[in-house]
Image (cartoon, rainbow, N blue to C red; front, side, top):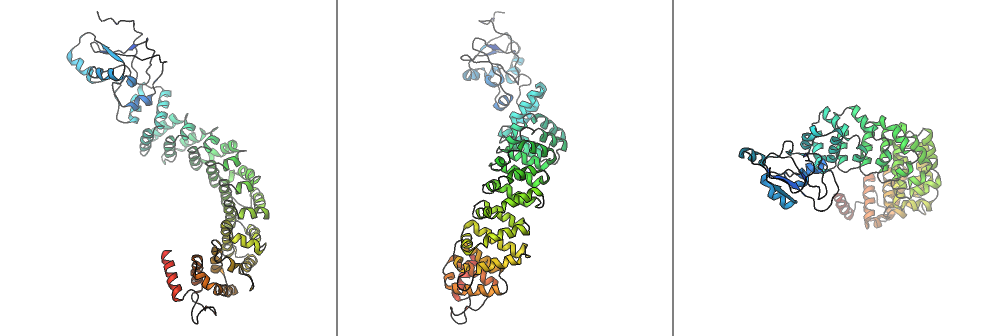
Length: 497
């Protein structure tokens, strides 16, 4: 019709909302538009291989009439704007009625309108998407901060059909989404939904098969595994045992993996024999590790100590040479204190024997940051949880109070950590022990008033004994901790506490 292009164009390309092809410079393409409307021809500077624009890029652009995102269709009103941002030019076509030209210039072709939200964009494109494209579009949407937030809000009022559709879409990419910082937000909320059926939860759990170890060591994946154990424990028991067997020590020493093992011990106590067996062979190494010691503590707290595998673990853990290392270790002392809190009579007796080896060893433990914590917990356990161990209690109290010539009590009273042992001794002393404690405090009266740690001891003594005779070291009629100076100091100390 006199409007021939200066070259022979390739076949017309149908504008698609999902897939747009770009070709080299010499293969320029044109879009089908209404008769009479300007024809926008997109050019690509330089040679560029054919590529496909993702749906997430298309929906996330938010701009109509841009060649890079919506293909080669342009309204007549925006042709000049597009030519400035992309190499395009218009070839006039046959004339058409003005009304049609105006309407075609003001609106895009049917199906290219952008809805308001990303989730609505996905649903608007559904009629033209295959199942695979739908899954890819939704998983890409979940990986974005805006998409994850929008779907999470949608889950607050989600129906069963929406949850089923979402599970079907994310199932193929579930292990990868669980390791994504935005994907875990959606997955965690989905798995914790009260309205989510058990069948869908089981599908999510079964999809983790083959990926348990990877997720256990991942910063975000370990959270999803823990939630899956909490909601569908029966589905994961065999998978965890099969995939983590032989790797328990490595996982227990991992920054993120130790949390998965702790959750297994708490919620699957009947299926963790493989965990106990592997840690038993490396119990000292695990107890001295910053992360593995947590797994041992959970085993001590939640597993029955009578079971054969736990009995073997305790036999190794409570050896005298092992206990001496653990008591003074920054992480091992937590394991020993867990045994004192949850162990039986025999376990406590073995730990008490470590502190009865001699005065020299006892003063080392009392003045150590970690050893003093174990010794203090030992006194509490003997006085409250295991009162039947009267012989061990009396022996330990005698070792602390000492004889008339020398006393551990006086040597550690002003120590940074030893003063806590003195305070605990004052609290639990009974009968003749009280008189011995008062004598020792009388001898330390002036030193105690001059130090912060000593004032704490005076406060514990006043709480235990009230007012009692100060003795020959003080003025007549005065009492320990209740002289005018001491009353002022104790009042200030109590108010600060």
